[in-house]
Image 1 (cartoon, rainbow, N blue to C red):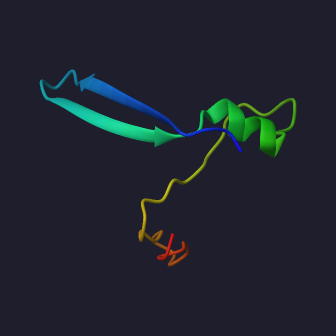
Image 2: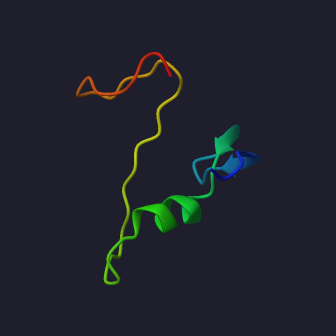
Length: 64
């Protein structure tokens, strides 16, 4: 398993607001290497859950 990384990012919106977010996890490149997308794939969609969070469809593990 790849080690978790941390990143702090400042987002400056063109509408005038600024937000600072702290994110952690593995690089997207690591996930792509595990999932082996088709060579002609142009997009990727993935969902990230915070501990105890569930998706709108009710899926997700509330204990993780």
